[in-house]
Amino acid sequence: MKLPSGAPGSRILSVGEYRPARVVTNEEICQRIDSSDAWIRERTGIITRRFASDDETVAGMAAAASSKALADAGIEPDDVDLVVVATITHPYQTPAASSEVQHLIGASRAGAFDLGAACAGFCYALSVADAAIRSGTARYVVVAGSERMTDFIDPTDRGMAFLFGDGAGAVVVGPADRPGIGPVVWGSDGSQAAMITQEPTYLEVQRALAEGKTTPPVALRMAGQSVFRWAVTQMAPVARRALEAAGVDVGELAAFIPHQANLRIVESLAKSLGLGPNTVIARDIETQGNTSSASIPLALAALLEEGAVESGQYALLIGFGAGLTYAAQVIEIP
Image: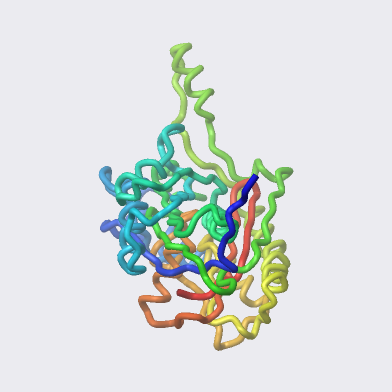
């Protein structure tokens, strides 16, 4: 039996993004909940977020971001071997969003699948791309995180309505002579799965309809304070393990790009890690809200557009969310 031989390493070649046109302020959110702009800013750091229109779908946004990334990398769609879409808000159980994305971007030869690891999904998918390239299974991989979080949020839920937004980010990953994506440190604490859940389940909705009963809309529910405590206490050790696995000192980091869940979590983690003044901390949460698996590539795209980081520098990524699931790795900035 023969096995393919892969590249010594892989790296992110380019980044693409898609941000819906509609900007939603805190004041607009507060029309339906008992809150205020000042309270939301103080508790989360969020000032605005983007809401997708009906025609801005999970697959469509992912395809737009992926096409931008391919164009920037100078890679033809026919050269893509694999498309991985991290999402938890694709409205269909099957077919996967990735199959539509593969078609929309013209990657006719590529395999495609969705990956569901909630807010850690992009980091999981990036690790899959790295492994595929180093194993020789693929040469070029498109990794996208795309979410329509607003489809699964109760706009009257005072604890959730102001947190989330929509959008997509994507990267093209290709072979490299040395590692440009560090080892992933990942895990999950299923004992805490009830902290972030979808209620009711689709089966519960089907049964209620079959029995002629009414049922509330499917929506995400979260034990916000418990999730906050978990993130600020448990994720810093995960980040340190990722740095150690990559052989990178915290002082070498040009950027820290965590999942954009809450600015207070971001700042707490940065403090726990002892990040210095030369490390840029991603703050895309302020204008994008929490976009789950899309938040890390969107934040990376923003830092590149701002000129805040340079190609070849190190960035630490860490995603964490429902499951409770987490993943972290060091990357070289494209």
